[in-house]
Length: 113
Length: 113
Image (tube, rainbow over all chains, first blue to last red):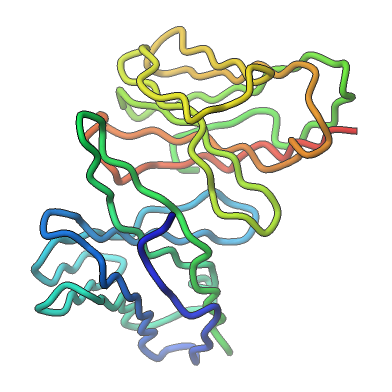
């Protein structure tokens, strides 16, 4: 089961910052948070990941709360091409096996012109 | 283009047919994955390969048979499928099994009739 909770859908005006929340209250201390998105008719696209510190790359910023129970993905200047389903994922640690990322239902983000 | 190419993009097959899905990556990655995305269901991991060796089979029925002849190519052989196997089948790759920032292909849309 996915260890995250996200809103089903969100709207954001074009040109504004899109802030996508995610709750992961049962996250363990050594489990990373990953974000992917899936644009219609395409495969998922990796965006960013983090453990404790805030992270930024050319696509987005990831803000993780100090208690690590929630995080926010920020798209600083949303465009129509950012319309997609955004998945917040906890990389689950498993004993004697590789870690696993489990996709949930995600947040459907609509960028409005 | 993501660097992961899947063919065909669309496939319709009867329940008695045998077909194969192909995935090719030009990224120099060593790990490759098959995922299934059914309508209104989250992505499900099916198989993981690392340096051509299968490292995970997520309880996938034997009517799905993966093959990884080298680190750049991954196949999914299909036989005697059921209508409920209709889905989007996605291939992904990553630098190695510890890299969870996957690069996905665009998928093969499979319809079983």
